Amino acid sequence: MNSREDESLAQAAVDALVGQLALAPKPGLPDPRDLTARITRRDHSALRWSARALLPGLTAMAAAARRTGEPSARLRAELGAIGRSTEHTVGLTGGGHRGALWTLGLLVAAAALNPGARPADTTALAKQIAAHPDRRAPRRPSRGSTVSARYGAAGARGEARAGFPHVRRALTALATSRAQGADEPEARLNALLTVMSTLQDTELLHTAGPIGLRHVQAGARGVLEAGGTATEPGTEALRALDADLTSRAWSPSGSAPLLAGALFLDGAF
Image (cartoon, rainbow, N blue to C red; front, side):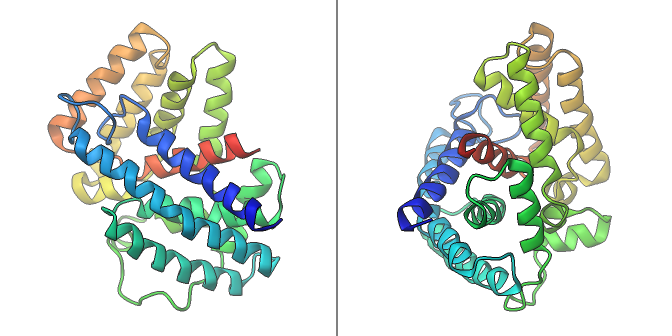
């Protein structure tokens, strides 16, 4: 793999993130809608703009993986350093995408280690990278790690160390929905809801507690059990869930980066 291929992998990851942002309606999450969205179009446009600021960092992560050649502690340390620098750069362009940077960074590095590998093999490599501690990381606990410790939730680190099970579930949901005749936006929304239905989202735990998390999970399952977004009952259930989360100001923000990870693997291989 050469530098052009590194950038191609990184661009595929950014495209996946932008594709996730363009999807609507996403219950409780930023999307392109105007009057009914939880945030304004200007804010959504800022997220789309800042997503593109991830490209240099993700390219550097792919190059680091190619240069290192194995899912080692050294690579984990390099990815952590690149990630913190990229997070600062993204902050200058409007911020956001911390969860996406974590998910996509590990998956891009894993893809660079084994170009052309199947998605399951790529997530397995990402698991090996994430298993190493980042010894240069700041010692202060993040909000996510604090919530994870309080409630026993896996959190973003646990998701990676388990080999991104929700990314793999989203990939299965994409394939199943397409096979059943759903169009691409419907398949992607079904994949998002599949993630939401079981993910122990630390942002939701922080804002809504365990009862709120279970409420959101049940709502997502309700849409899928109604037939998913390709059916009229499923669409009505999705609208009701969206209105409910918007009124409560609950955002299942942990699900969105995992959908972006699934879209990256789906499109890159």
